[in-house]
Image 1 (spheres, rainbow, N blue to C red):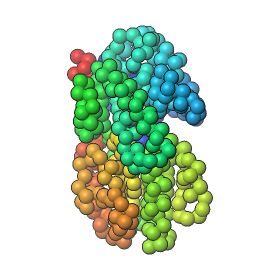
Image 2 (spheres, helix red, strand yellow):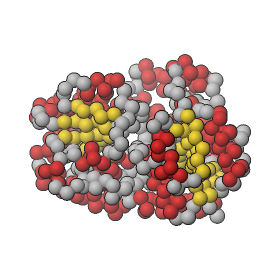
Image 3 (spheres, rainbow, N blue to C red):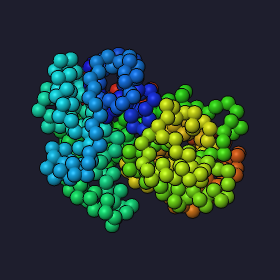
Image 4 (cartoon, rainbow, N blue to C red):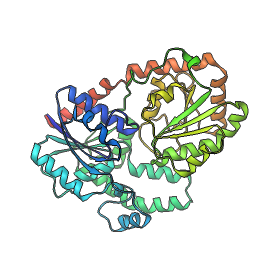
Length: 401
């Protein structure tokens, strides 16, 4: 069986967030005998990873990553463009032609667009030959906009998002209807999608984690700093909102209790509002992009995930739990997890609860170890990558055979 993956970035082994899902899906499907191809945007610096990806996807076509759109272009896209905001950020007519040529040339059985934004290349694409179309939804865009509006309903950005919803919602549902299969990361997301559009064929293909790469290091707490951390891709609004809310509402009361505590903010493209906090010598360390998340997780005592907006599955929590960190998270962050608060995770949706739960874990070494060990056991049992790819393979076979 031949599958063409369409991705926003090159799915090499050092990516994170949603893109690491793509890497492991492709790697394991290739090991199971599938022939894979890849059409992707290439970011500067990723050229060195092309040979690694060719090991499981021999046919690769790339396009330069589109430049960030200006506010004027965003407005034009929303009103007149072929693709609505915010998906116009990935609009590239030459990519449409490239994908059509690849499918015609290599006769792929199915094309899998990872992320809704890349689904545009399987929807109303005049260059697209007949092929099975699969959209892997890492988070419904319209749902994410609605949840973002709820956090600050009367702000100027929310007014723009309300305008965007009037176009993106019907466009997105039409995209999903056009597909032969729509994949979601969680059952909750699948049900949300079906509530809005019941005439869509859906399946759940969950997030996983590399339990060998992300694992507790020998030495336990003796090998760790007095530090907490958060990881993310900071071009995504939910991650930026999480850090700014945490710093403004939680960090300073927490540091009064623990004056030596550090807060690592780890991930690429942090905006100036976050970078500035890292320059003030307040215990906040903004790393920017790193080659590997695992060593940073290994040096911290606790992982915090204060997401308030957005949709999808927080794979960053899986990595932290696999690495042996107890997690303090909002209920939104833990969506889709079979977690038990107080047993394998601590949930906190207010600044006060966040401060108290982190303080308790910092002060109680035994409790930290118990929660971390239970979480690691759950991850190894239920979220290892081979098991997660089993569900993807089963869904694809139902569509293609």
